[in-house]
Amino acid sequence: MSGRTTALTPPADAVKPERHPDAPAPGEIIGTHYDRCFGCGDGAPHGLHLVTRAGEGVRVTAEFTVQEAHQGAPGLAHGGVLASALDETLGTLNWLLRVIAVTGRLETDFVRPVPVGTVLHLEAEAVAVADRKIYSTATGRIGGPDGPVAVRADALFIEVKVDHFMDNGRPAEIDAALADPDQLKVARAFEVNP
Ligand SMILES: CCCCCCCC/C=C\CCCCCCCC(=O)SCCNC(=O)CCNC(=O)[C@H](O)C(C)(C)COP(=O)(O)OP(=O)(O)OC[C@H]1O[C@@H](n2cnc3c(N)ncnc32)[C@H](O)[C@@H]1OP(=O)(O)O
Image 1: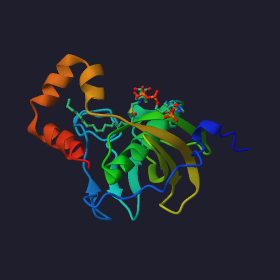
Image 2: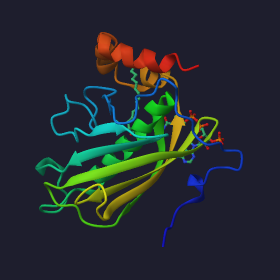
Image 3: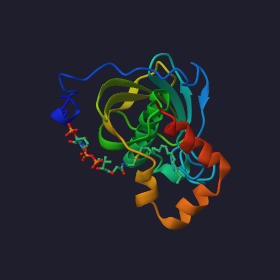
C-alpha cells in the first residue's frame, strides 16, 4: 500500500527539472548551506553531518551515520531523525537547480528499523517542476548503496527568495549569518539564478 496523497502528484503542466549549467559536477561534494544546519552543518554538534554529492542529472547521493544522539528506541534511529536525513538530502537537490526552496510537504515510509552505527545510503532525484513547486523523491538504504531500502520519501519543495529567511529567522542568527562572508557567498550564488 503506498498511501501517497495527491498533493505529491505533479500537475499536468509540470516539466522535467533541468540541471543548472553551474551546478556542481557529478561526484563533487555539495557543501553545507549553513554551518549550523542540523542536517549538514559542521557547527551542529548533534546534527546529522550529512555529506552529499552531486549525481548525474538532478540527482544526489548522501551518507549519514546514525549516532547515539539520534536514538528513538534503544539502539535504533528515531524516525524524525531519519525523516530529517531524507529532507536534507532532498533539499540539496535544489543546489543542482540553483533555486532556494523549502520543504512544503514530506511523506515518509519507514520500511526497516535502522540501528545506531548504521550508515544510511541516501539518494534523491528531482522529478518534476511546476512554477515554484519542485517534486522529488528519495530512498535510504542500509548495508551499502545497493542494500535494502530502510526509508523512502516523496516531497514537494517550494521555491522562495532569500527574504524568506530574513523575514522569518531569529534576528541573532540572521545578523550572524549576514556578518559571515562564506554565508553571504552561498546566498549570492542563489540570487544570480537567471
Ligand atoms: C541571512 C542570510 C541568507 C541565508 C540564505 C541561506 C541560503 C539557504 C539555502 C537553502 C536553505 C534551505 C534549507 C534546507 C533545509 C532542509 C529543508 C527544510 O527542512 S526547510 C524547513 C521546513 N519548511 C518550512 O519551514 C516551510 C514553511 N512553510 C512556508 O514557509 C510556506 O508555507 C511556503 C513558503 C512553503 C509556501 O508559502 P507561500 O505563501 O510562499 O506560497 P503558497 O502560495 O502557499 O504555495 C505555493 C504553491 O505551493 C503549494 N503548496 C504549499 N505548501 C504546500 C503543501 N504543504 N502541500 C502541498 N502543496 C503546497 C500551494 O498550494 C501553491 O500551489 P499553486 O501555485 O497554487 O499550484
